[in-house]
Length: 117
Image 1 (cartoon, rainbow, N blue to C red):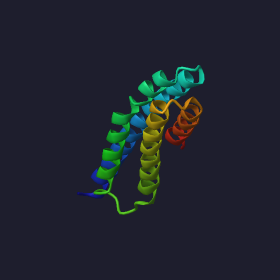
Image 2 (image 1 turned 120 degrees about the vertical axis):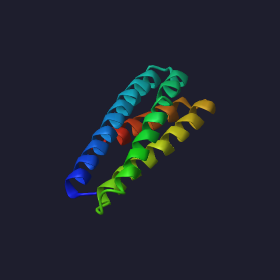
Image 3 (image 1 turned 90 degrees about the vertical axis):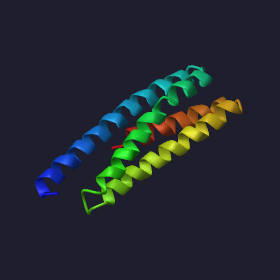
Image 4 (image 1 turned 60 degrees about the vertical axis):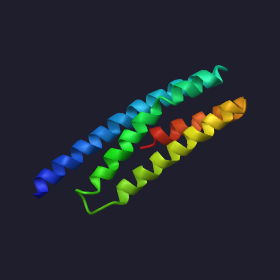
C-alpha cells in the first residue's frame, strides 16, 4: 500500500473512531443525568447502549495497526476503550447490587473516560 493511500485510510479510521466515541460520550452524559436524577437502573440501561459503539471503535482501532508503524497513540486510545469497558461492567454490578452511590461514581468516570481527548 502506498503512503498516500495508507494516510487516507488512517484518517478515515480515526474519523470513524472519533465519531463513535463522540456518540458514546453523548450516551454517557445521558446515563449520568439519569443516575444523578435518581434513576439508576435507567442510567444503566442507557449506558449499555454504548457497548456496540465502543466495540466498533476498538475494532477500527485494531485495523489501524495494519497501516501505521507508530502505535503509541493507538495504544492510548485502546487503553481508554478498555477502561470504558471495565467501567460499564462495574456499573452493571453496582446497579444489580442496588448501590446507587456507586452507579453515579461509575457513570461519572465512564463519561470522563469516553470524553477524554
